[in-house]
Image (cartoon, rainbow, N blue to C red; front, side, top):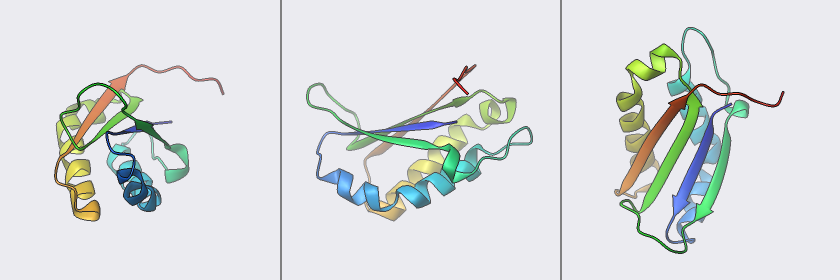
Length: 109
């Protein structure tokens, strides 16, 4: 189950992002699908985090955590760039940064 953490310096930006969450989950599921696993949007969790202190390099930053299937590892930079471009197009915000954190993952099922 991938997790998308959306970090916002300005809480008002969250309203624009909230509107596209269903489409973002669908798009991300497509990008993270690989031969070993086909994802659905319902398997992706999205969280909004307000940054009260600190410095961000983007107006909005996304941190996507997912399992390290070899296909994802090979395309990780492409996945990040495609999600960034998708969000820029859908929201109009240009300063969006995306990180894909791939790891071995346990879960509580």
